[in-house]
Image (cartoon, rainbow, N blue to C red; front, side, top):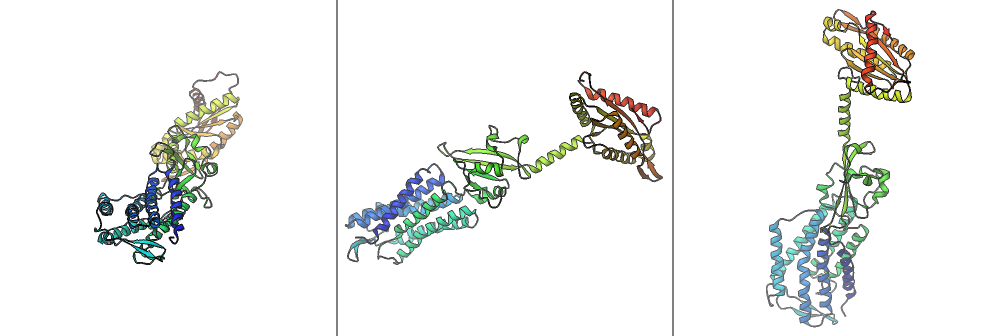
Length: 514
């Protein structure tokens, strides 16, 4: 009876379970890499068990040769798995070198009669008088080529995984640590076997240790959904991105999130592993994915607000190689600065650059809007047209710079004299308009008088003393009851209030006419 045979049987059972589970993930690159690794481990372990229970040297050597298919390929599978795991590629000449070592080893194992460079004269050695093991009598190809080759590839895999461990998200650290431990155990056991340190002489427990590896890999697979959540060069693609990115699996579970995305939610919320729909209304934008256009992209008119930032959102469905399943990638592109700049430019286009009040185009737009509201609600609409008396004389006497200062001062008085709902704009030259919805003629006259008095108090220093300002104001209140709706109201309203202002000018300036 072989001591500890149950350990090897346990190992093959665990590897078989994990292998069959992983078959469902073969549509992904990482799934195929994991399958390759598991297949090599399974071949090695299964053939080793059959070798142990065999009684003749010929049968044992047959299964030993099958074992070496897994033994020779497993370091290649481990390296391939690690490269896929971290999203890196190996240059073609390295793969050629690896292929040559693998091909040479398998040719000598399977095809070249013994003795050869791989092994000499294998023989049976009794152990504890209960069973026999094979002394393979390894040659230089095994000792000086295959073993260094195996250790270099596995150590390289470990190096890639350790580098990943030091840089990634907590979930990936847990995954990667399990992979590292699972990789290290068979490596350590194999090194101990080479140096003759083993519980049973001549018995290699590396395959038995694969049961522990299977448990660790299985734990990573089931506990952390390893094949659903794995890094794809996250240090390059993900973590360096300034835009938040979420990756969802087919069940809409968040399987990845970069630092920018994690920053969108409170520290206590663990995005990775959470159901996206449960978090959408709390931290993102309720109905976000359902509200996007057929292109899976939000337009500039429906940017999503999250906290105090604005985002354009793109949702991309990524299918696997079979055109099924896959994942959903949600990209939040921060457009806050762009939208703020757009609003500033838009606002500048509505304002008079000198005085800061509405320009002529915007003023006319508001007059027509307020006219429609006044007409529908039967409210009075008062217009005040104002200009600076003798403004041309100001320019001729003191220069255009002083004329600009006069306009700025005049506009400030108007702006601070109106109600919050009133509109003030520069109509042209030194003419300004105030539009007040719901203001009666009497109240408009009071407002005009307050403005006239405040303007007269303004003093502008010049090289020859202070200059005073004066203004003439025309006031016109429109009552739309019983009138037919105008098709071009701004033109008529402005023309009528302009006539009233002309009366004030003709009667001596610095006065109000209505």
